[in-house]
Length: 204
Length: 204
DNA sequence: ACACAAAGCAAACGATTGTTTGGTTTAATA
DNA sequence: TATTAAACCAAACAATCGTTTGCTTTGTGT
Image (cartoon, rainbow over all chains, first blue to last red; front, side):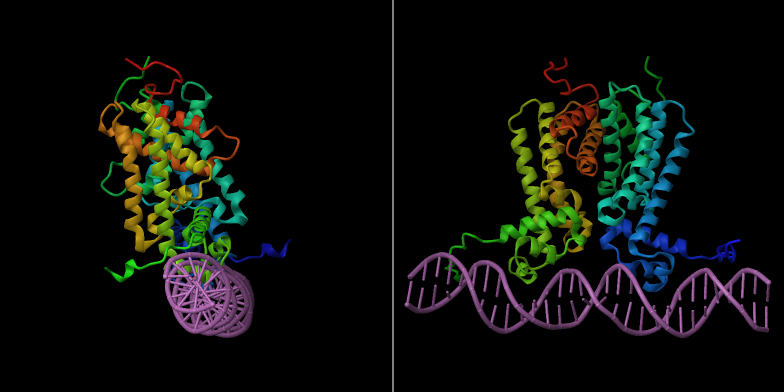
């Protein structure tokens, strides 16, 4: 019986999640280099040094936030598309879910969108892999459409992801709802086909 | 006659441009907070303090780079579209010019794409205005198309700009040429209409 | 050749950076 | 209640940050 097995139950009110939330907020707003450990600690209600009880370094903290960010978007999008069957509706639902994550200023989603994997040299490949894993989700969605050729599918996917992640630079409250924007985007790559008509029938 | 008029001719080999180039390189690669004055000075071949002979602050240096960045893209795009007459060809040429600026790792273009106006609080409105001024160029191009309604025109513009600026996150050497990508993008928002066929006739 | 401004060096400034260390509080277990 | 690990504070560390200052070099017009 290993010694490590003898452990107390962790304290209920662990503030690790507070640190993660604060870090997500500041990384998402100011980027990796622009957010300081002191800012994060203050936002989490503790002193700078206390951060290092929960995470061994600033970079590890960023990776943890990034992982949870990808995890949240994946879960949100998967839940949205699991309720649909028609390929175009599934894509539209995925776009809407993604856009809501980004446009509601969801801190974790902003980190994934804003922080470049290259900003953290020691974790570049890890962050890239996470991002690629998420985008594979959209690859499947787009491949299920009946687009004219694999090239169009590839670029439809790239256009959608790029377009959606760029919304944070121009969107502000009062603009169209994420739902309306998602419909426009999906219709955009659809090119007259697909799900852009609200209650319309399918094309022949 | 004002005293300031009595000035010598500036030295020919002024290294102000070297500083700008070095700053563009590092701001574009590492962002504003991620690039240090020392790095920039070293890349320009001088000591950190010497930067402040040419620019009063790091923020002013960023603004200068950003201005030149916008200026370069505007000139490049305008030159590209002035040779075309057909609206779809003009849009396609503009996209190609923009993409070449970004994908050839043009340092100045990267700064405009990467640095958020909000990263430099003292100059946010200035940078936003510059960016908006450039995007107005695309507004005109898209409005000249015969898209179904102003909403579609607006989102076609947003999709194009977002998509193009996002390419830097996935593009690497060996991928399709900027020309091919531009054609795909323009065809994407065109939706079966427009200039996606290479030597094709215009639609009726 | 001389004067003078442009351009840059050398060296430091105080502030802030990520991080470490040792001690202290808190709460759960036995 | 005594024990023990979890969780955090308090204070500092060396390094690096943007920036300033005083002095020197470089080049150009007269």
